[in-house]
Length: 335
Image 1 (cartoon, helix red, strand yellow):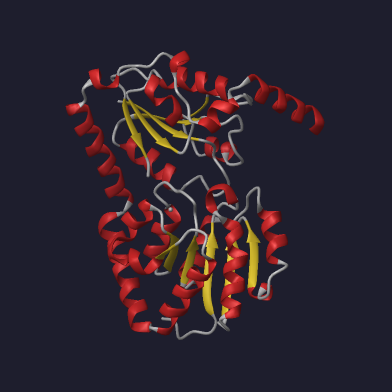
Image 2 (cartoon, rainbow, N blue to C red):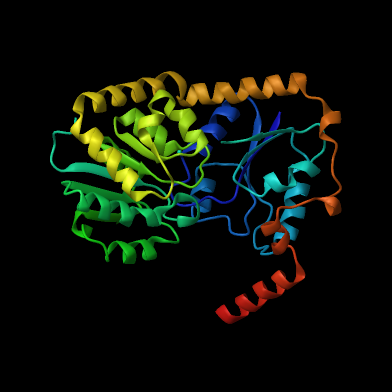
């Protein structure tokens, strides 16, 4: 089968994580797999991914206007048997795809002093909610907790994060390392008691799975797919997305109850080992694709003409002529 792995871009820390695992596994299973990038900017890890031998298609490179990107994405994806989408505009054009195409959407001891906490990943607030980190630091400091937070990663909101962190009490207990090699990132997770994952939304979080495997306990936002990954531990490890105090509260409580901490740590390690290894993930995709191919009813997926496609409001605005004019004006001002 010919399979498209659709991503918006290849950001820092993106290569070698979940997309790389899925790409490698599906390719080793004998399928023809392309990573299809749907953003106008392929991302900072694009060259690295090419050097690693990834088959990549940038169907919208340099195209700033959403309507044209949608049109090009549809044209590109129409030749595949299976579309696996991970937070890209491919989701918007899915109703226009030929009816026989399969579509899959991807849903990341405390006696030591200080408590070691980590954040590893992309520094962008829009999806990763990184600007909550300084608020969590302030809350931990208010609780008189002896802690140290290591932040490893880079991204468009790094400077804003640094400026906000510099204004909070407890800033001396934070180290921002920037982008680090994958091995060093794993070592940070391995040495941390807790890992913060405050994302607004995620696919299958590689950071969460690595955190579980390496013995660090994730404190994460209460989004649905995190609950699925954490299983029975979710009730004690998930908090409201924007509640910095809730993150601090769970860290304080679990740090004080070492028996419960080690129980959760052991449960998560076993859950990762039995349910979320790369092999099991790939086998799950292969089994799902086989099942969907067997029971697929093309008549239930009749194609919608592109000019009849109904978009959510925010995307519809981005296709308007006035939005295009604003983008052109903004680009001219930047020059």
